[in-house]
Structures are given as structure tokens and as C-alpha cells.
Image (tube, rainbow, N blue to C red):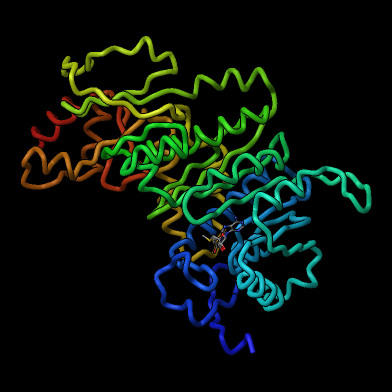
Length: 408
Ligand SMILES: C[S@@+](CC[C@H](N)C(=O)[O-])C[C@H]1O[C@@H](n2cnc3c(N)ncnc32)[C@H](O)[C@@H]1O
């Protein structure tokens, strides 16, 4: 019966079914079982990240929780594309999704795989708390904590982070967390952001970076409550979502040292100058260092002002991608190359198209030409994955404006 209602789809290493009624629909909560073709790159990146994590952090056999699996495509791809998996929990609260997961596991001949596959239909928080109990009630065995937890909800992940952190391996665990409530994180609804993430966003040309930094701040503070610290390995924005891959540590002194990564971004709404500031807010000047005006200063935060990625992790992913067969291989190559460049750059970016338009320039100069000129002047400059029309630099905005005008 079920078979008639299904359509076969191919993605990465796998084939899988989705419900006919969901085919061609705009991806939304109201689908019978969620599937979004545009998120394929998210799943490609997740497979690469888990393999990079295995190589760099955890050679032991992995226990993974895919807490919001929908059709199961992400789990199935992990099983087929990632090495060293021992056990995977495939979970979704939606009973229709779980029917499909079972079908898709069979379709990919994984029911006989050496990997232990546990399919559950639970609220993710309930599942996490059950797994967090380290002693199995029936066998009295000590259960090993999961190494990898993926959270991929509709909207905000904020409700699930505390229980995921309580459940994951305290040292060298890998959290993979998606947020799709980008309007909130990017400052369109600032009060909702304060309510959900305890931080004030800013609706600016670089709000995608601010939103990503707010999400990392939130994960890090919830981790701190649980006596854990986090290190971002990859922070990745694409289309309508942010996905953070971070690893856990439990050294208390290191957690305190990492407070230096928490701070604010100060933004002058008069001249557009911006800079990051540590968490001693009493020391912040009430005057813009560039235009010297006092009236229109604004801020975002608290948020993560430390590095967004770990270079050796990104390098590992770059190498793994070279050998991949992903449809998005070229896109990922470009994305990771921008991510590598931006990692050592200052916070924020400048949109050259907007800037040129505001200056009334006839044409937008080529990004690569501008980067060359800025570097020649002795400043740092790079592309950024957050916006392909923008650059990052330590050059101040008025000097950048002068370069653009001189180029005309
Ligand atoms: C964005 S979809 C996940 C997409 C999936 N990871 C993929 O790659 O195709 C979100 C899923 O979370 C499930 N969900 C929503 N609330 C949940 C909860 N509290 N616990 C577990 N699953 C939940 C939904 O049923 C939906 O299938």
C-alpha cells in the first residue's frame, strides 16, 4: 500500500523515498514528511564534517544521534558515507516520518549492516534524557555516551541544546546544530532574539555573521551551565539556515579562559564603522572612533567574538571533499576556500555592491581587484562565505570608500 504513495529520489550515495504528496511542495512543517532538496549541501557538509571529526578527534567507533531525521536521508547518508560508525539512533517525533525511515533503511539494504540502527519516534529531549542515563536499566550495563548529536529542527534549536549537551560525550563530542529562524537571529525581530537567545541582534549588512555568532554564544553558555566548554570547528551559513559544528571540552580553567571569546559588536549607524569589544562593557567609548559622533551608536550581543572555524578541521574537510562524488562538490570547494580565508579576519564584512551603489559609482569594481589593492596597502583582506558580494578587511570604512572612489 505504502509503496504506491512513494517517489524515489537520489542524493549523495543513497536512494530514498519521499511521499508523493510532498513532491514539488515548498518545504514546510505541513509536509507529510519533511524533505528539502536545497538542504542537500547541509547533508554533504555534515558527512564531510563527521569524517573530519573521526580523523582528528575520535578514532573510536562512533555513536551518533540523528534526533530529527524526517525521511532518514541524513542518517542513511551518514551510515554510507562516514567511516567508523558503531551505532546510530534515528529519531523523529512524526509517525509518518518513522514509517518512511524504516522503508528507506530497507531500500538501502541497511537492516543487515554491521552498524546498530535504533529507530525511535520520540520527542528529541525525551530521547536525549533517556540516553543520558548512563546505566542501562535492563542489562545494568554502562552505556557509552554518544560522540555525535545532530539537531535539525524547524526554526530555533534553542529548546534542545541543554539536553543534547547533558547527553553528549563531555570531551571531544561533536554537536551539529542547525537554526532556520534566521529572521530572528539576523535582527528582523530583535526582541524575539533576546527572548530566545539572550542576546541582542542587529539588522545590518553583516547580520548573517552576527546571527551565527549569537547562536554560538548561546550554545557555549548552555554548555558552560553544564560544566562544558565548546570550540567551533565550522560555522556555516547557506540560503536560509545556519549550521554550527562544535566540539566539547571539560577543563574548567579552559572554560574560564574561553570567556575572552564572549563580547559585543559596536556599530555606528552614522558612518557604518564597527568593531568588536570584550565583555567589560563599562570600558566601551560612547563616541565612534571613526566619525567621532556620539548619537547613533548601537550594539549586538553578547555574542561569540572568537574564531568561527578551526583551520585544521577545514583543511581536513577540503581534502575529503576532493575525493567526494557530491553533486555540490564545486560549491563546497568554493565555500570552504572562503571559510579558510575569512577565519583570521576581523569581525564583519562590507558589501561592495551596496557600498558602490550608495556612493553612486557607475560600476561595481571586481572583488578580486579590490582585495589586491587593499593587500598592497598593507592591510588584510579576504572574501567571506557569508556574502559572496562582500569583503572582510581591517581597513576602516572611510579608507575603503576612498579606494572605491579612486578606482572609478
Ligand atoms: C527540518 S526537518 C529535519 C530534516 C532532516 N534532518 C533532513 O535532513 O531531511 C525537522 C524534523 O524535526 C521533527 N521534529 C519536530 N519537533 C521534534 C521534536 N520535538 N522531537 C523530534 N523530532 C521533532 C519534524 O517531524 C521534522 O521531521
